[in-house]
Amino acid sequence: MFRLTSAAAVGAGLAVGVAGAAEAAPTRAGQFVLTGKRSGANIPNVLTPGAGYFVHYDLTDANGKAAGTENAFTVPVTVGLDGALVVSTLVLVLNDGQITANAAFQRPLPSVTEIATTYTPWSHTFAVTGGTGTYVGASGTITIDHPTKDDDKLTIDLK
Image 1 (cartoon, rainbow, N blue to C red):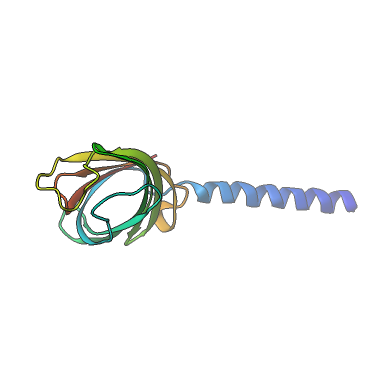
Image 2 (cartoon, helix red, strand yellow):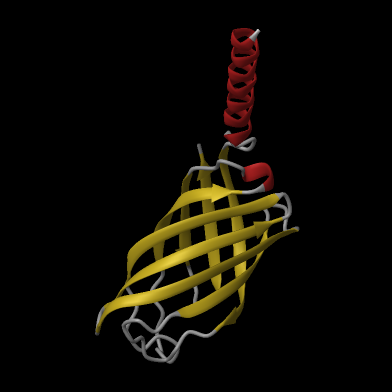
């Protein structure tokens, strides 16, 4: 009786484990594009190592419909006249779940960021670290293009 009960318990545990693994796979794989309009930020005029800042964008889908928000907290690690090496955490709060991502990248803007008279478009890529809702277990990349200071385009490629 003990062996049967133990075997049943182990079998049930395996069944739960397999079911849990199946639930961890994202239900939305593939690539999609969102566009953002900056609606909030506390980016300092002069970047300083260790002094973090926050940006917030309102996102729309390919049809121009509200898709959610993009929120990033970024900390400069080193700062030079030609830009800054930064680490950043990104959270997309979308209508059907959240996607989290992290990156370290060279921000190729002058260290004097918000008062620059010219703007150079730039891009960077985040590694997707997970998600909720439709994006449970998500992995992949998010490439963000910044064509202007207040606009961005996110290419989300989920595996």
